[in-house]
Length: 486
Image 1 (cartoon, one colour):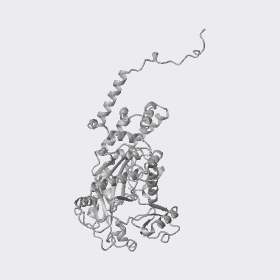
Image 2 (cartoon, rainbow, N blue to C red):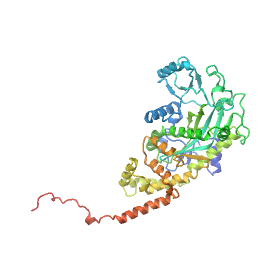
Image 3 (spheres, rainbow, N blue to C red):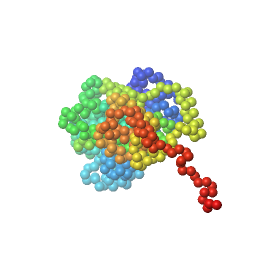
Image 4 (cartoon, rainbow, N blue to C red):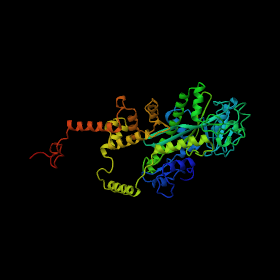
């Protein structure tokens, strides 16, 4: 555990599972600061770390805005509608001024944020960006959402906990537990006149807890009282008050998936360049989401290292559940480091000598390219490697606990819809997508049963079409075959 990972809920969960904290490189799990690219390369294939290389593309507000803007350019402006119009300063200074000139008569407000700030530090509500922002400012400025959905007259945001267990194939989960953080002053009056009242406009918990009006949670079971609720209590409130909670939640899942797809290419590239195994990394993310008056979700920011500190009974219950379920999901394995090192070294030597079994065959590489180009189905030619990948995924699905599997998911059409937003067709993604959307009559088969059926079919094909014996196969012409006869 390093900086950012030494929270009580993490230490206690690991201790209950029999883990001991250690120093140096002989660890099973690293939870804390992001590793540097060379450090990822030093991991062995069974070690786990809680950051993907390049996750800062989500964590910094400017990087996230650029990634989402690129996603819209590639797939169309309607592909991602969850981020308010955003400007990166100083580069977009003239565009911001033009936007304000166009909208100033409508009273458009803006929110100013440092690119990598947290806890509400440096955030301001702006009514005139041409006079209220320094010419040399390095900041992210977005349209302010001035028509938020309110609960008891208060503005709020939601902390949604998301886990990515793998990017190849991509597997995404959202936890049933989360937090709803309220402002501590009523959202009323002119936004322009009240813009300096941070307790009215900013939902940051670290800010509002210092207000004298803040009501703290004192009972984990009474999670719909005060200025911080549980996500479960909020969703129950939505249903009890006649709001379409299912539709809202479906939109939030769409927001989460498209945000992750916006960075899928660079993170996969970093994984291939710097990380020994596709299973070395996982990530617990905190998505901060706000609803407008029409119940449309808006992405505020993504926390790549969400705070897991607990200062109330409800906090402790929720964050302990999220961490425990995360640890179950990623399945940290016990192994003999010396023996693993010997196996890895033998495999390296085998690859250098081109020995049989030391890598994928040319035939399999051709098959994979044909799958990625849409010429054939992956499941029809399932290999031992495919079997291992699908078995790994199915076992993980059974360990989800309080996490709901969002991608891939065969329960609705959203998985097929999201699959259209991958910039690159990757073999393992296609394989897993085919598996979870296989025909209904095959849903009762386990991965092992399906693989055996494929092997049986391949055996029958070989018997029906045996290879010609060497003496009957086409032979290359003899050196003088092209010459005329004697």
